[in-house]
Length: 439
Image 1 (tube, one colour):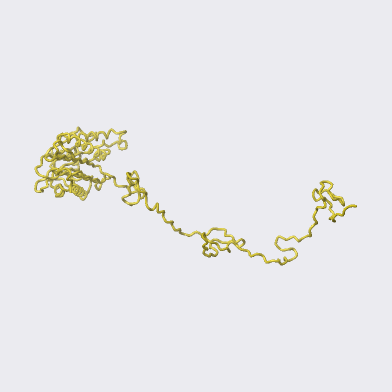
Image 2: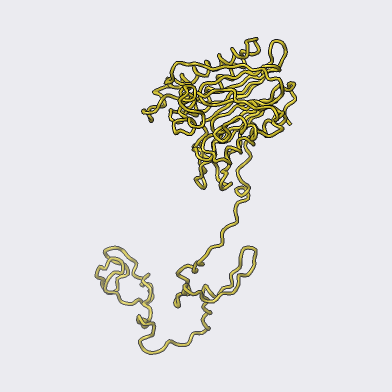
């Protein structure tokens, strides 16, 4: 007796392989599918249309009310630390999608931004340079920018004063000041000061002043080289017992060699100014001991003697190597006429490779009273040419305050117009004891 099977819905094809079936088959003859495992067919259900409504009318009421819909903007946000954010409505310029509630653009940015406070590490300025190194130069104009290696401010572009635009030095009892003046773009003067001890124990002081020839190449280098070479020769010769006048002669020769050597420098620095003469300058110097005053010169820089007692006459101790001096010496003009001529300052003697045969001038004097020796370039004596004029420009306390006096004399030239570089050295006579210095 056959076992009773649950009633099955008649199938015409195998649900697995679609093979046609015979009535009463329990297994598919093609694939062996168990036809008794086919689930009963569910009741048909209406298909929902694309507009969301059933085809035959409204949806039946839901057994439970739907959950409330929350948009992202409905939630109360908090800052870090659980501090609630301030309430905000719709932001102008930042619409919210009405369908999703999602904000799809950025919050509008302000027209102006508050600058961030400067970093205190930066605001404090550059770090202090290591010990033993020079601090960076600060612009003299804006007082903020640093000065580059070319001498210009990195902030405002202002050209900085050169080191030689104004120089001052005090060496024991003597002093000197040099200034660019009011018209020249650079200072082409130079000076050197020094003190020595003679073999007999007396002290000697010396000053050398040089004026670069502006029409030559590198006049500033020429004056600097000459002043240093002459001072070096004096410092070496005087302690050995060389007579001060001979030592002055040798110093001028040494200065001449130093200037001549500049013309032989590599591819020479004249390559950019081929039509100019070789480096050149004038020179004037003075050596003062307890009883002797020696002067030496080539060119038109000068030495004046101004006694402390102004009732005694001052004197000019040098004669210019110039066109005007030659006219006066030849009797062709008097001094006033010669120096009024436009050719007056054309020099006939100088140091340099293009100079005529070197002929150093030296002279010795033995003043019988105290005073000061004024060693200067024409940048000063153009405004105090005569000895009396120079004496009036020299302060009465010049022997006690040589640096102050040198400053006063430079100021005299600047007040007069400052058309040239101005350099002056003030050397008291007789020399005070070493170490006394100036007041």
